[in-house]
Structure formats: structure tokens, C-alpha cells
Length: 442
Ligand SMILES: [Zn+2]
Image 1 (spheres, rainbow, N blue to C red):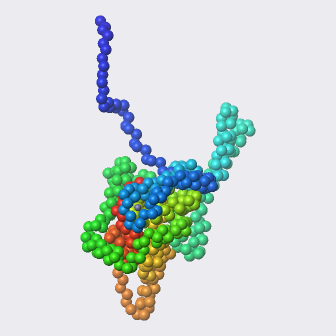
Image 2: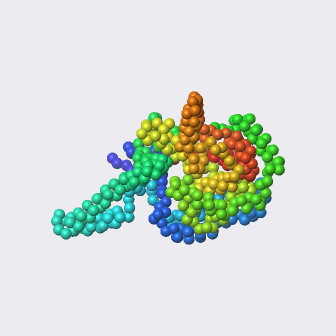
Image 3: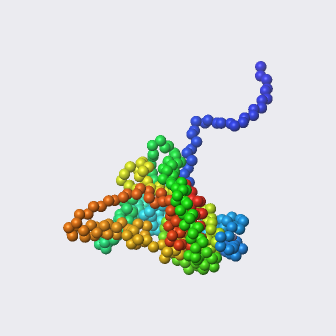
């Protein structure tokens, strides 16, 4: 006997196990701006329109130095954000952007043409029923062969493109340029198949790097004597007659459009973008009104002694130290931090303005323009040679300061700046900035 039954089921939090594992989350695609394939005039026009729409918080212009007006730092943040938005808008409308992974470094326009021809004749040959003889067959074959040999030639050209440069740099005795070309030629693709012990997914690898790099972090505030020495020096500078810059008009004149424009021109092109997805090209090719916005932004920063929150964000990219060593050893990587482009310009402007005050010893060769390791070695060798030739013995001691740059105590650094008598507002800005720093690993 059959009886009809009606039943109602209520499922909450239903889990279906269909035997498939959830696909691993895809890594976010990285894009690269192709300025060489874009219409720069069009970008210039787009940026003129988008930058024209940026609202300037004009009442901040009349703020006095050290203004703590309510919400003013919020307005600076907003202003910064709208400048960045304007540049990004103009770029996405006018600049070609392609995934980094799709780039074949040796590809050129000639190959584009050969590829188009080959595809055209191939589809014609296909629609004709793939004949094994006749004119169509021969044209299809020859186009395909031309395309293939074109790729081979381009690849070989690409591989040998550094040969002349290498020879040339040896002849002209340019060791730095030589090694640059050398490492470009023999650079391995290091992004693949890196597996650390106990790490399964990419995010675990990234966390491992984050753990490693943050272990280097040194909290400057733990050295209380450095803090109090800094505060003392700061206070005596603030109240002294040497504190001559603490005047709004000085700063307004200092941050001139000319200085900012020079600093923007000094940025290297073709570098990776920071967390704002902007590079030096975005500023270089933008409408000149960007300089006026930067002047105002920097002026607001200095009179209020705060930097936009975004200035503190960085993306750490682990770079391999030695390509022939173990790729799966975390100690074989050093961190490079990508920072927002406007913070780079601001830094460079401050450095330009303080250049005369920041003198270093003639015997310092690191972190200085135009000198480096070779100069240090030369100075060392000539000194040793001089004494040895005059019949003396020479004893040398070397000190290897590991991670010296990362472990600098900020308060000692700031005290050095106070002693150099750089404008007080700059020191305040740097103090505020260093409290905002945070990074993620890519
Ligand atoms: Zn204010």
C-alpha cells in the first residue's frame, strides 16, 4: 500500500562534502603600468581634469605654525587621499596596465605583427578544412615558421643584450655599472617553488617572513636615557635663539614649487609601485597642477606637524641575497620596503632643504651620493700602503655591525638632528611619522 507523505525540513548551517577540496585562494594579480604603450598627452589631460576636481582645504592655509586645530589632521588625510585618487583615476583612464606575469621580457612589436599574420592564416587554413597541400597550406606553414624563428631571434637578442654593455663597462673601468649589468644578465626567476620548512601555503611563507623581519625591530623607547637626552636637547633648542625657522612664512617659502618639481624629476623611473599603486611616472607625466597640490600638502604637513596616515604604510618585498645559495633558507633574503610615492617626494624635499645642515665626515662612504665601497677600499689600501712602505707594522680591526641600519635608536637619531639645527618642525614631523610606521609582507 502507498500513502502520500508531506514533510518539511529546515537546514541550518548546511555543509556539503562533494569530495572536492576548496580551491586554494588565488594570489592577487600584480599589475605593471606600461607608460611606453600609453598616450602620455592623454594622461596629462586626464590628470588636469581629475586634479582640478580635488578640493583644497583652503582654510588650512591661514593656520599658524604648530596648529592643533580640531579635525585638521583629518582634513590633511582627506586631502592626501583625494590627490592620490585623482592620480589613480587619471592613470586608470589613460595608462595601459597589464598583469606582471604576462610580460615576456624579449617581446617586441615585430613579434606582435608576426603573431597576427600567423593567426590570420591559420584560421583561414582551418576554415578551408585544413588542406595538406596547396597555396593556403604553404602560406600558413611559412607564417608559422616565420613567427617561431622571430621568437627565437628575439630571445637570443635579449639574452645577449648585456654582452656589449659588459665589455664596454670593463673597458671604461666602471665596476658598478659592470656588476649591475652582470646581475641583470644572470638573474634567476626566484618567485617559483620556494618552500620553507613547515610552510604549506603562500600566506604561511609571508607570515614566516613577517616574523623574521619583525624580530629585527628595535623599540627605541626602551632606552630611557636616549629618550630623556633627546627631550632635553629638544627643549633647549626650542627655547634658544638658534630656533629661527619656527615661523609660518619661512615654511611657505621653503616648500616652493621649484624645489618640489626638482625632487620629482630626481625620482628614478621604472621602479615598483608602493601601496598606493603609483610610481614616479604618475607625477612626472601629470599636469603641472600636481606641483601646487604637493606644495600645499607639504605646507599643511609642516605647519600641523602631522603626516597623513598613509605615509606610514609600507609593503615589504623579500629579495634574495645570494642567488646561488639555498633558495629555501629564510636567512638568504633581505627586506626591501616599497613606500608611497608622495612620502618619497616629501622626504627628498626635506633632505634638499636641510642639505647644508647635514654635513658628514669625509671618511664616511656609506649612504652618501657618489661614494661607496670602492672608495673605502681605496682609502684603506693607500693608508696601509703608506705605513708599510715607511717600515711600520699595520694592525687593522674590522667591525661588522649586523642590521645596523634597522636597529638605529630613533631618539638618538633625532637628537643628532637637533644638534645639526635642522628646523624644529621637520623634527616634529619625523617623530610623528616614525610613530606611524607599519608594514605588510607581499
Ligand atoms: Zn590648522
